[in-house]
Length: 489
Image 1 (tube, rainbow, N blue to C red):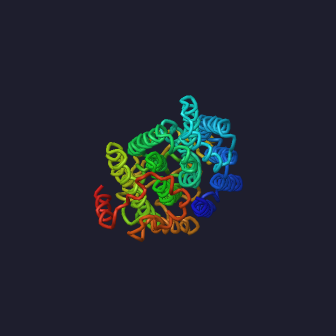
Image 2: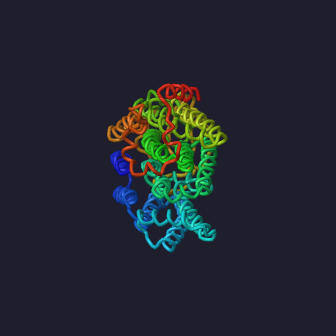
Image 3: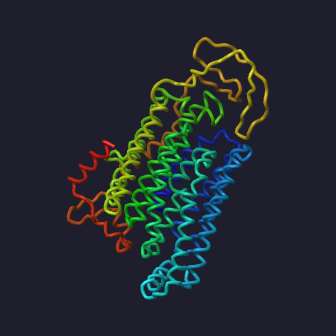
C-alpha cells in the first residue's frame, strides 16, 4: 500500500503542476495535497487503533478541504459539506467500535487485540458478550462503509467531483475511498471469526456493485461516470473481503487504483482541452454529450484512456483482469446468486466504460453543433471563483458550425481541442505502464505451488487467515477459458 500511495501520489503531483498553474490557490492546493498523501501513508503504516483513528480523521479533513477547494462556488461548498456530514456518521461508528473493543480487550495494539479477541470468541459462550462484540465490529465496518462510499452511505460520492480533477484521481485511487477497504483488510482477523458480519460485508458489496454500475449508465458528466465506476469496483473488493478472499481483495484494490488514476487523469486532460473551447464551465467541459471526435485532436490522451478502459473492463492481460477474475472465481464457490450478479455487472462495466470512451473520442465534435439565434440571452461570466455578474449579450447568427465563446473570460479561444503538454502526459504514460504490468505481481508462476507469486509473499503473514478458497486457483487451461469469457462479456 505504501508503494501504491507513493507512486500514484507522485504522478498526481507532477500532473497537477500544469493543471493548476493558472489557479490563484496553487500553493494552497499543493499544501493540501501533501498533507493528504502523508495522512494516507500514516494510516497504512499504523500499528494500533489510536493511530488509525488520528490519520483516518486527517484523511477526512484533507478530503473536505480539497473537495471544497473552489469554496466560493456554492455547488462546491455544498458538496464538501455533504461529504463531511455523511462521513461523520461513519467516523462516529468507528469511534464507538474502537472504544468498545478497548473496553473488551484492554488494548489498542493490533497483535494483542487479535489474540485477546480470538480467545474471547472461542473460549466464552456467553451470548451477551458475543452480541456486544459483534456490535463493536459492526461499528468498525460502518466507518469503512462511509469512507469507501458503499451502500447506503454512498450519497456523497458524485458531489465530490466538484473539486479539481487531480483530487478526484487521488481520492478515487489511493486515499479516501481506499481507506475504508484498507481498514476492513487490516482488521480482517476480527471480521473473519464472526460469520454474520462477513455475510453482511458480502451483501453490502454486491448491492454496491449493482447500484454503482447502473448509476454509471445514466451520467453525462465524465467525472461522475468514473466516480460511480469506482463505487462499483470497490464493491467487488468489499465482496471479496466478505467471502474471505483477502488476497484477491487487496489485489483488486491495487490494480483498480492504477487503472482508475489513469482514467481520471485522462479525463482531466480531456477537460483541460475542452476548456480551451468553452472556457471554465464544468457543465460544458465535462459534458460527454458536447464531446466526440477527440481522437485526432488528443491522440496520446485517447490511447492511454483506452488502455485504462480495457483494464477496467477485464481484458487480458491488463491489470484488472487478473484480480477481477479471482474475485469472480471465488464468488461461484461462495454463492451462485452473488456470482451471477457479479458476472453480469462485469459485463455492464464494459458497457458503461465503452460508452464513456465512444461518446468522448469517436464521432464528431458536438460542441460545434449548437444552434444560435438572434435572441438576447442571459449569460453569466464564470470564473474559477464563482459567478461574477450576469449580463445581456446578443449572439450573431452563424451559418457555419463554428463557435466563438464570448460569455467566458477566456483569452485564448480555440476552435478545436489541443493536446495537453508533456507535464500532464508524462504521468499518463507512467500509469499506463503500471496498468500494463502491475497484474504480474499476482500471477502464479509455479503450478505446484499456486501461492508462489510476489503478492502472496508480501501478504505472507496473513495467509493463515484466508478463506478456504484461497488455493482454489485454476491452471493455465482455466486461465485461457476465463480470458475468453472475459472478452466475450
